[in-house]
Length: 242
Ligand SMILES: Cc1cc2nc3c(=O)[nH]c(=O)nc-3n(C[C@H](O)[C@H](O)[C@H](O)COP(=O)(O)OP(=O)(O)OC[C@H]3O[C@@H](n4cnc5c(N)ncnc54)[C@H](O)[C@@H]3O)c2cc1C
Image (cartoon, rainbow, N blue to C red; front, side):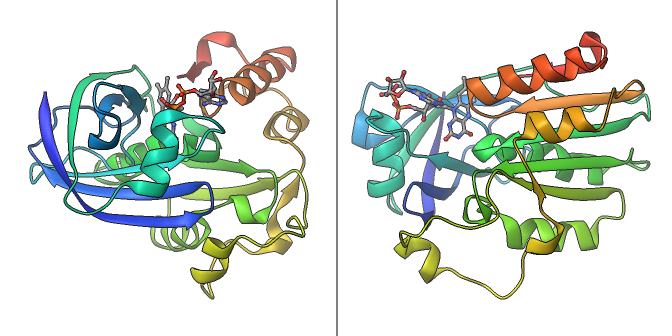
């Protein structure tokens, strides 16, 4: 068990926050998840995926989306604050980018983006990088909470292509005060967004026969995307998911 202290709580949407911590170095591998215990729900343990690769100086970042009626996600999004001490334990997970050099297709629904950011930054440290195609999906453009960071990363990392996918091209009519507060002037251009579910967009491509496919997101999104990939001829053994 490792202790880590919240140093920044950045609420990006009504239902989503990015939490940064510094503490004891946690020996996880990029792409894994860890068990988190936070003071607001002492005794409750939930699994979250670090969005940065492991660092010797103990920096951690988590992206947490509030699940309606959820104990831990609600309190992390609305109550966590700098100074809170989290207990981190039990890194697990097999999701990884192998050394075959095959192109990598990452499919992220919502905060399923977090482990992929960790993997992409880890791959960036390698002497040779495979091509990485990151499909990042949401219901509408507003759901793509890391649009600005992804835009900058794609500009800086020549091996990375980011493909935004939204079910609806227009945001819902009701305002999200947190989104309005953190609007920035850069981001993935709306004109480049593909419309549909991630499963629709991936399956319209046809089979991915010589790729590593990694899928992460809600259980429903993962199931439907993996099923459609297999239905369209992508080999099951090429697909990793959490
Ligand atoms: C390997 C792994 C990695 C994960 N990484 C992240 C991450 O990086 N960021 C993140 O925000 N979450 C992540 N999760 C989900 C997280 O562990 C919790 O399940 C989530 O935050 C809800 O916990 P809670 O205590 O708020 O809800 P609970 O109080 O446990 O559940 C409340 C209600 O919501 C339902 N529910 C629980 N989880 C979900 C869900 N994901 N989608 C829809 N309904 C749900 C439950 O069935 C229940 O009815 C990950 C889960 C796993 C297994």
